[in-house]
Each structure stands twice: as C-alpha cells, then as structure tokens.
Length: 435
Ligand code: PLP
Image (cartoon, rainbow, N blue to C red; front, top):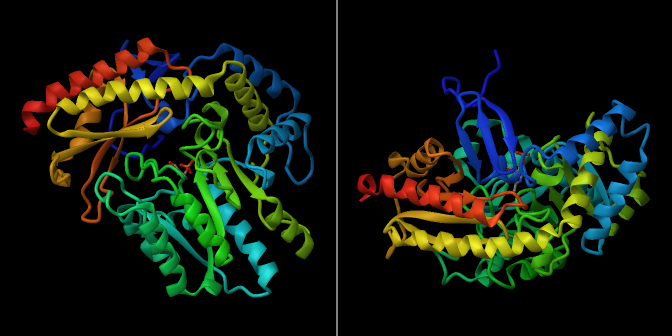
C-alpha cells in the first residue's frame, strides 16, 4: 500500500485538472490556489505541454548525464544561463529543491577546498526562519527547529542568524540583520565559514518574508569581505513566481550560486537547477577538472525538454508581466480580508502572497499553536472547494500561523475573485470560533 505523510488521512482522489481547478472522483471541484506549493505554475491539463512531453518521450527514454547530452538539454542550459545574472556561467539540472541545495553546498565546498588548500571552510550560515529542504545538508541549514528536532542526531550543526521580519520587528532594519550575519561570521571565524544560504524572498517557513531594501546587497558585501559563498535559494520564490525569472535580480544582487525548483517544469516532472558563477566553475576546473557530484537523474533529458517548453510558454504568453499585474490585484483583494480582527499583514511579490493570522493585531501576538488555526483555515477552505497552503510555528516560541496564496501564472481575474471569495467565506465561517 502506498503511504502518505499522514497515514490515516483520506486524501481527495484527483482524476482530472483543468486550468486552476482540480476534480476528484466524487465530483468535488477544488480551485487550486497554490499548485502544490507553487509548482503547477501553468495550472492543470495543458494539452500543448502534454503533447510536447509525449513527443520528447518518444525520442529517448533516458541518458546518463555523464555519458550523453541532447540538443534540448543544451538549449535549455543556454536559455537558463542567458536569463540569469551575468556572473552566472553554468547550470546543473537536478530533481528537487533539496538535492539542489545539497549540490550547491558541495559545489561551494569543493571550490574552497581547491582555493584554500584546506578543508577548514565548512560552516554554513542560514536564516531563521528559513526552509531549504528535507535531506541531510538541506535540513541542517533549515531554520525551522520543529523540522530539525526529530533528526537532530543525524545532522551537522550549522549556524543561524535572524531573517528580517518587517511585521514583528520592523524597527530591526535589514541593516541590523546584515550586521548580525557579519557578527556571526566573525564569531565563528571567517576562515571556517563556507557559505551563507538565504531565500531572497522567504516562503514556506514564515508565510512570505520580503526583505527590506538594501538587505541582500549588504549581505553580498559581507560575503565578499569574508570570502564566503552567497547561495540564494530561489526554489520557491524564483523562476517567475515574484514576477521576474530570478528573485535575486529584484534586489540587484549577484549570488555565487542560485537554486531554483518547484515550477520549472510546471509540475509535469520533477526539476530543479543549480546555477554557478564563472568564478566557481573556473576555480573547480582549474583545480581538479570535475565537479565530484551527481545523481542518476542529474541533467535529465526529458525534464529539460519539458522545462524548455515551460519557459517558452511563459515567455510567449507574457506571463511574467501577468504575474506582476495579477499579484498587485490579488494583494489588494486580500487586504480586504484584514477587516477580520485576526487577519493582518498581507504581503508578497508577484503571485507569491501571504497573510498572518494573529490573536492581537496591536501586539502582533500569535495564537497558541494548540488552536491549530492555520490548519483549520485550510481544512474549511478545502471543504468549500479551495486549496491553500500554510506556514506554522515560525516564531521563536513555536507559534505563528500564516496562509499562503500562490496561484498559477496564468490565473484569470475571475479565478482570483473566486479564490478570495472562498477565503472570505472560510474566515466568516470560523470567525465566531476565533473571537
Ligand atoms: N528551498 C526552498 C526555499 C523551498 O521552499 C523548498 C521546498 O519547499 C526546498 C528548498 C526543498 O525543495 P524540495 O521539497 O523540492 O526538496
């Protein structure tokens, strides 16, 4: 028997999807306001993509990335690098955000082993909150203690610094958070620090965290000063989700390594990417020739072929501009929901949006976790035919509830109306229980 995350739970059995809607085998329809967690960026049932994927499947089944390449793999790599910041020269395709994070850290490590001739640089600094994945290295740098707790014994100890939080600590500017990073580097010893990994716009771990202006640029300066790699994890916020191909470009930073994932293949197949700077690649090439890392499905030809079609589709239909426009309009509509006494701080960029559920707006006090408010919102919304996403437990005391809304890039204004209406009805329904 297949097992799911929750052993006992009965999940809706989806038999068909069309646009932003999913249909289950009992005739229920769900408006998919999140596409998994920002994965189905073109919605569901896109005939054109399915035909192109089937065509690619007919050519070859599989090629090992260390033995062969294909025209589509090469073309996709060229296109991705051409869209990336100009210090990026290469890209490696992976299957998930977590394995891309592992890859990024190993890439930085191999570079610095060659550059310094020592293995001292191995501490990775990350933000709290922050999410980077579920595998060993990725979980070790995930700033969500509740995710790490059970597996702590298996993980290497890494270092954390606070991420900017414009809602609860507005007085603590990006400058203060950047200074905290520099203090941490000096405390740990720059010669022992390998990298700083950061989500340019934080996603799943805090219900969207847009950094204050200047923060990432200061971070870039600090990483340069102490010769540590800046890794931008754009698995959730990148590839158009915030309205540009690269979220780091929105803040004018050029990371040494960028990671993307989620919607790169619109969810048709697993696909993620690790982009590396010219300096890193040339350094590794000079020192030893090859990057000592790879998976069976690295540079997967079919995933690349589908990724290329998705990229072309987004470009051809001008979807990044659509994401920016519809994002503004979505946040405007979500702001109407702050009329509820327990809904606050609608935030985000592009179609990467979220809002807080709080017990007291004046003090920004969260609900006790035992209330399980975000879970209840999602459950009731699902019963009303809306699929949303949440972040929970991201505050230092383990509280924190927020709701994420990440519709497909081709969402229509009518679908936005519908998803906000489902949310409004859900909140109205819960209001007497929450007051
Ligand atoms: N990095 C970020 C920013 C993420 O949001 C996620 C997943 O949500 C990951 C990494 C891990 O990606 P995956 O779940 O594909 O392994």
